[in-house]
Image 1 (cartoon, rainbow, N blue to C red):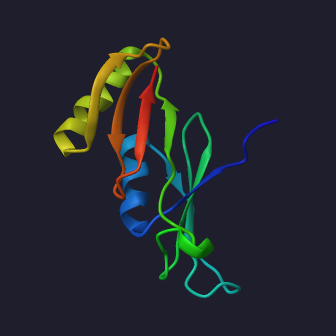
Image 2: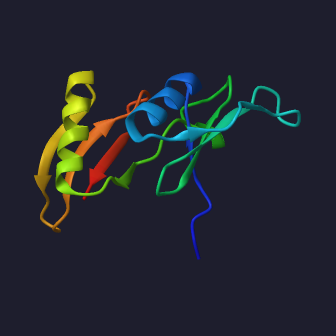
Length: 127
């Protein structure tokens, strides 16, 4: 089995679309505006060698209480290639002010850096 896509609730759909295009080379479809659910809008961003991410928003996007949708996920790990690719992307992220943790080898053997997307969600860049 393969994952069809992962989904991310966001308060700033445009910023997320730009982030995934510029940081990861994602390709976006046209903006989808739901006729069935008022206010729902989304983009699908296809990563070059990986999954598709559905970026979704609603005007009433909440804090998760009472069954409301909320922004984010715990984190997502994106395999960006080799260690030098992690280093290069971490350098770009540092220049943009979104680097959370510089490249390092973790206890479980991954070489990774951690960045934040426009909503503050954590993304691990791994090799």
